[in-house]
Image 1 (cartoon, rainbow, N blue to C red):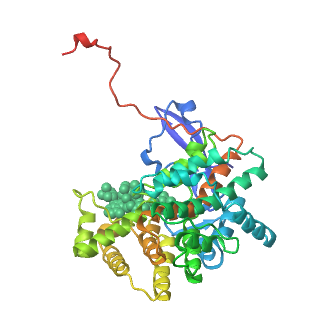
Image 2: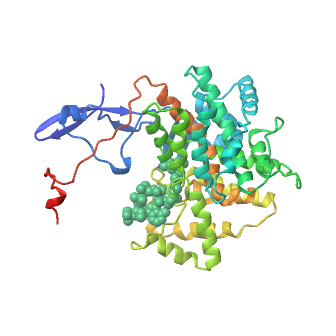
Image 3: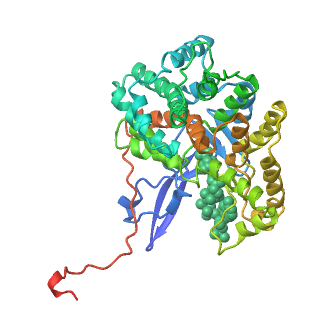
Length: 427
Ligand code: SDX
């Protein structure tokens, strides 16, 4: 017997279907609400609203669970690679050995970008933020690779092309913005090794790819690969629902991720930690400011719309800080400040009562600093990691024959009807 929810409005009762997910999560299906009752629902920020049914990622915010296509992120971080995880997210299963090899070869084959793209990069102002460049260049990609027809074969080619080229574009943009010679991808390097080499190799100082950093980068990108209907993924789905080409939808995703409340938080966390180090302000004073109602300052990297416990990704990222720094035999004072901040916050009733814990962005910047990634590229690193998720989510929408254009409603609270007053009659 199908479960239903009973709604009583103005003395009339309505039965609305209840949808039950794989893990028992429940939602009230309101697709016929307005037609039946004339009412809509109101949920600014969509904290209580499901936008779709999806088979890609499962999160349990109370238990701190994150699974990609059913596989716990902890297992993928420990045993998988970013390329394999990207395949899993996009195709719904792990690749066979043959598929893994053919995917790796394709990613190498597609790793170059059109030489004319360098002209675009060279003409951005030197102070342009890499996320603004990436969003523009993601859109520009379509000019170089016009929409392929939507056959599965062609669509897969587009996904692999994007996964490979976002990495090349990011490194190329970094080199050109620093006035350095562009380093081309190498067919003998893995996905992550290629990125590090394209970023840091130079004719005067050849870069030695450190396998520990390659492993850390795989884990970093696996942890960022998807996160169900977060702000930027929702943007990709909303923009894609108008049937615009995939490049434009992804460009919108990059733009949404840039915000400091979302992916831009990884840059904001490090800037916050650097400010604490430089100003000498105490951690207790920082926590006090974060709690103050009249102060807009927030503890960046803390809190989450879904996780009401420790973000499982932050746990792995925190451990990775220690392993990467010890392997590199380097010390980062910002890590001590971050750990102290966490310690003070997690024993403070404000954070405990509001279920505010470190999220993926709280420690991720420490790992990126250890790799030598410049701060203004931290969110680009997040975007490269999130691309497989955006692709998988866009694909899930595009393959739905009933993919509806996203068009929320509103409750109007403006002026009642009134007449136009000609300018001559106004004071
Ligand atoms: C990401 O959605 C995803 O999955 C995102 C992401 C992904 O992988 O895609 O996980 C990546 O974006 C992680 C979040 C990165 N952002 C930050 O770290 C910025 C700092 N965090 C906050 O701004 C906030 O916690 C959000 C934006 C993450 C979540 O905001 P919500 O769910 O809208 O919660 P809210 O702003 O309504 O806060 C609830 C209460 C408020 O206090 P009251 O008004 O109830 O008294 O908690 C307080 C907030 O003031 N609060 C904080 C806080 N976060 C929330 N107070 C101090 N410091 C904070 N960080």
